[in-house]
Amino acid sequence: FEAIGNGRVHLQVLRNVADPVRTFEVTNGDWSSLRRALEALPYDGATNLGDWRPIPGVAEYLLVSDGLSTWGDGAFPGLATGQRLYAIDSRGSGSDVARLAALADDRGGRRIALAGKGGLERAADALLAATARIVALQGEGVTDLVPQAWDVDAGRVRVAGRLTEPSGTVTIVVDTGMGRPVTTTVPFTAGDEGGARIGALWAQWRIASFAAAPERHVAEVTRLGQLFGVVTPGTSLLV
Image 1 (tube, one colour):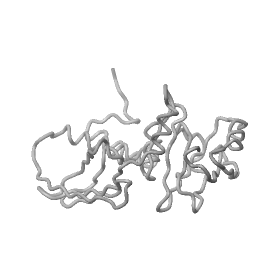
Image 2 (cartoon, helix red, strand yellow):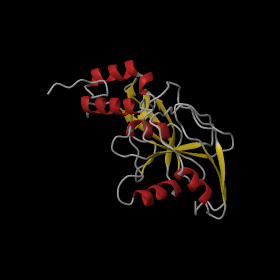
Image 3 (tube, one colour):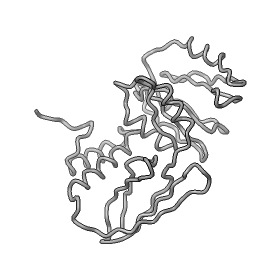
Image 4 (cartoon, helix red, strand yellow):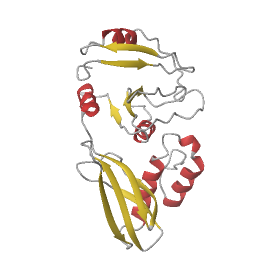
């Protein structure tokens, strides 16, 4: 809040039925009224992650959660163009890390962990730093493109897909956070390198992309796990 200076925060607590939205003003970095409200919150065990609606004009959302939706089956809301969501992992061990990451990735943000030594400082850095991010993937001769991560890691991106032709191109559009997006087109030719290992890697990334709502993709996740030998939440292991 020191970095924000002056701003407005809309707070909504998600329970089995979401609390009404409350609005707090931050003035010169002073968020004391919001802090008192948070410290006074009673905690129950039920959470319906889908029981809220985006507010027009809000640019960024912070979802502070362990990712466990224990009540209701409504879909998590989508966001409008220009809005993004950061998932603040409030629990660490025991959180649904895959769901939190997918919810944020699908909405222009990222999962941020609070747990561990220096967690608050790292979380603040992650929220405030501009990060290059993939905003579009297009392919010729390839389908079902999926990145390992939407954020660009040290200038490197990793993308996989299913070939439909022996050669083609993959076009990646990256928002650098510095203004104009950067577009890169990479040609490819089918080969034998990697084989089943590459297929399993693509399946893992594809399954991870469904983690925001795995209950809506059970059949596809099961099919990919069986076809590529990937362990999924529905896999039984005999040891």
